[in-house]
Image (cartoon, rainbow, N blue to C red; front, top):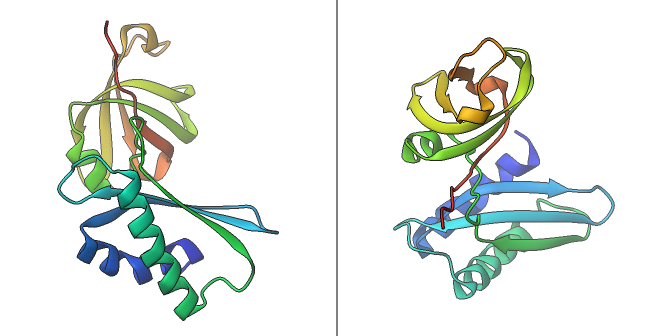
Length: 161
């Protein structure tokens, strides 16, 4: 199990008790490492600064006791923001019908970046209806992407004024 998974396994139950869940854990750097954890409220209310402070204290205490990270690190707990990352399969199911941006590890229909609306989700793949200006060279307006092909996925809200 990698470090991010071990951290999630350690802190998720305590955060759930406080009313939060982990959206994503990023470990940045190797010298003085930065541990970037984004959280959301389990009731889907907006995350406040107070929520971040409360979660930060809980995570920090657990990490100090368990000593999972042997070197100095910076802990940053934040909201996932309006362009929330989609990390777990349940995230894709929850945001069905929303606009997304997807970047893949490998070429899918001759490219790696896609923008559109999340149309369908199952256990192995997602289906995105592409934006008009993002249709594939073959003219396809729908793209199937396997979960293991996804490098990064996030919400891409459409702000119409």
